[in-house]
Length: 283
Image (tube, rainbow, N blue to C red; front, side, top):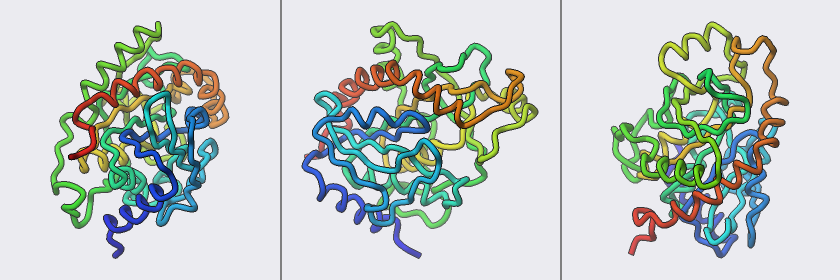
């Protein structure tokens, strides 16, 4: 069995050797939301295929490259796209990019995704802070032998989504005149969309949003002590809420429509997170 720690370390060193910036914040940009990385300045673009052991994105709307660059005055590492269980990857492979972020010295991440709206107060195009999650993907990237170099055997998930980061995101949204919701994200395996009965079940157990990603990345991040802010874009209302079929094209089109407000929120939030003393370089 390959040692995930050594693989992540090798991948991280491969990335860092190709750029001069040393980001403290990582971004994972989901379906239709990857355009933010194109706006980074002084950037270095590294296709996933050129990073050792890195899994390759196959989903439409996931470019499949890491962009190291400046978002204003903040150096960041942004993944344009991610991988999912439904593509045939293992939980450990899905979490591997987060492991690489950790070995690059990143101590805070902003995760984004396209999600189906379950909460009836949401509308298509709404931005929602994830306050908690429900893992219904049937697995966990931390299962198997624990590598203590990453983190403890039983990491706490009481505050998986950093409360202080959510508070500053809400403050910046108010400054921008934006409506920013908050809710619980349910992660399912996919790739089929959920049935109306499944959506009714998810609403009953407390989910506001549903998607096929993010949770494994959060579990790996918290295992390593990386702080997490996660934002969903409601790209469609979930099955049974509107009397119409769901399509991935709708997901991509909605992501394009909210791009301007989404990027404005990210640019406002990043300097606030960078000022967190917990993510400053270790001396």
